[in-house]
Length: 400
Image 1 (cartoon, rainbow, N blue to C red):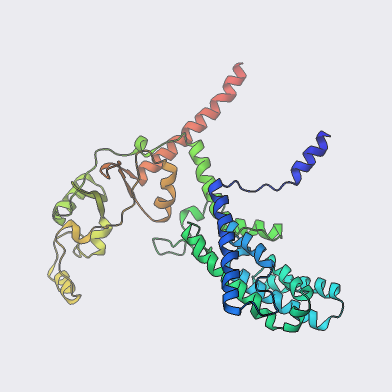
Image 2 (cartoon, one colour):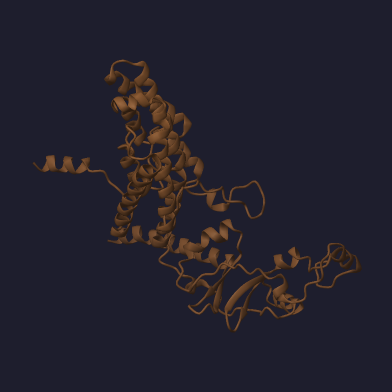
């Protein structure tokens, strides 16, 4: 008996856990989608036509569009292309194959065969193909008009509701594949986090070997893997935070400070960046050596003193020489809090080319700064600690 119960439990699919709020959101989305699709179809076509105003496959489409909007089977091209293809195939089979059972089977098979290479696989489209064959005299009389109404109109209406509802309730739709992260140094190399661990090529190779349709896109799988790796590092790193590794005696400037004073601070402390702060707003930007070079503040010899040729080049470019920190500072600055786990700093500092991460408190006041050197030292020390700890265990076991 226990074996039977265990086997029955294994038949229950292992779905990702979702909150009650998400379940309610999906249910309300389906309610809204079907209600508006039926209502608008009635308003547009009238209730006097013989064709159904709302076809049954829209219920299955609603499940995907509102309960699994990130699924590759629920994207706009999937529903529009899949339903259109299935309707055309179904009507064609109904017209040219006399036996309805054979026509239905061939319609579903052909619909799948066409949808997959076109990249518009949509499970409810199989029901669309069946409806076109088994929908009765009214459907058969409509012929290819059935593709436009009700299939095309129903699909467009429920897709429009899904676009509005999902985005209004905090679900990104459609789920666009993210662009490949650009290397901040403008070289052909992938960003650092794409060179170690599980990389996209590894994932694509495994999926090709698996050779089955998965109801999740490769980019989502890749994102999940990277998030899992970060969580694993949190666990292995002993919950090291920015507060543990940051430099607390931070040299800072204000927007009104002169560039000469800012440059003198960089040279005096042998650092490459200065947080820019105000008394009222706290951290408002950051100024780096790159900012000086990018705005052509440095002369041809790497100093703040411009030669006559430098001044001529500035004048020909229609620019005047910046004088204050506010003139060249980077205003959109990434920051962390003292409680931020250092593992969360790895992606932005590795992939975005950030060398310094200001640490701010709840009032946006700078309380420290984490540099790439601080991060490397912390990671190296944790590695030494783990190696030392794993090396001690066998010795203890031998003594015992």
